[in-house]
Image (tube, rainbow, N blue to C red; front, side, top):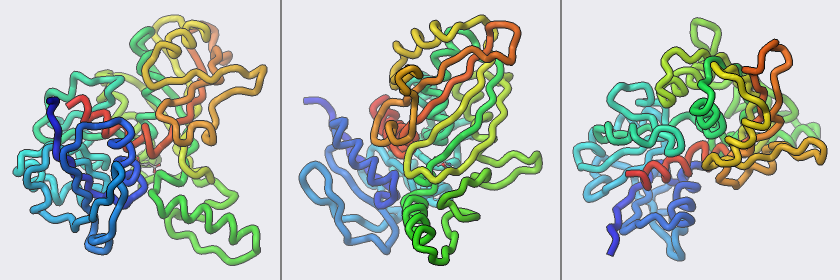
Length: 334
Ligand code: HSE
């Protein structure tokens, strides 16, 4: 009989936690016992799993006894607080927060990009930021073929990036604005209904936000490309749950749009949607609930005199491949 694992999910009631439960079920992960952990507020409630219901337990330092794999999606502070308890109990933590991503002893892993890095873990493996994941599913295969040297990105990030409360705020404000009612921004710094906000995570001294710098540092770490140049503007848009990105790519070698399409058609986790004549291109409504990242609008960068530049557009489900699915794929790799 193949081995089965005791799995815990910390943050089980959040948008990503719920999707982690569904992803374990959908991918038939060999779960022996599943523990759902959350704050005391949710303890005692139940969530469905594989035709049964599992009672949610309060997350405490004792929650990890006999657990093999602990999936964390409850924010960086909770991950930092419970890391010693997880590691001391002998479990491996797969952490969706940004708490440990840049730590030397913590591999940052996408199964399609750098699966070999997982071997270096010392009890913690970090799941990258959703915008980085969605970008690299498409960019890593092109980088392997033609060596990426510079990348300029603009993101169009869905409200799901701020969790279930972000999505609820978009729905509520849309209704309120249509009915001329007053609105009160809570999940975002400004109104998100019928607006966009070029501000995700805190600002750094150099004028970039931390979200924008994650695109630089996480990409360099996973591609093992410390000299790669990346600039990015991250924008929150009134979309429910799939992130999109416009990417300008510069390679060391020449690459044509047709070559790029051929590479991407073979790439795991990618669906090429690139038929402008028939108005087919990636859109968040089509990427929602899909495991694959949609890639299209593939064209030569006409601002260059050589053939080393491409522009592409990607859309991917932030909650799935951007978070829960990648975390479960890391668990599968383990
Ligand atoms: N930082 C992302 C966002 C979500 O705010 O859209 C976390 O992966």
